Image: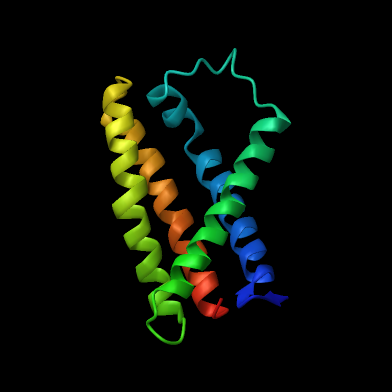
Length: 135
C-alpha cells in the first residue's frame, strides 16, 4: 500500500494502535483525569463524534509523522529513528503546547501530566510502528 513513498497501511495501523492505547490509558485513569479536567462524571457526555474526531486526528498525526520521518533525510527509516522522532515531536510540539494551553486555561499540572504522558505514548507508538515498517 505504498503511494508516493508513503506506506498508508503503516499509517492506518499506527493510528489504530495509538487510538487503542488511548482507550486503555484513559480507561485506567478516567477518574483522576476527570478530576484534573474538572469534568463531572454524572454529566459527562461521550458521543460517538468525539471518538470519530479523535481517531481522525490521530490518523492525521500518523500521516504527518510519516512525512517527518520521510523528510529527515537520515537514510533508511528504522524503529530507532521512528522512536526518536516521535519523542522529539512530542517534546517540541505536543508537550510544550499542552503546558502553555493548560496554564492559560487555569488547569493544574496534573492534567498536563496525564494528557502529556498519553500523547507521549501515542507519538512513541506511532513512531515505532512507522519506523518498524520503514514508512
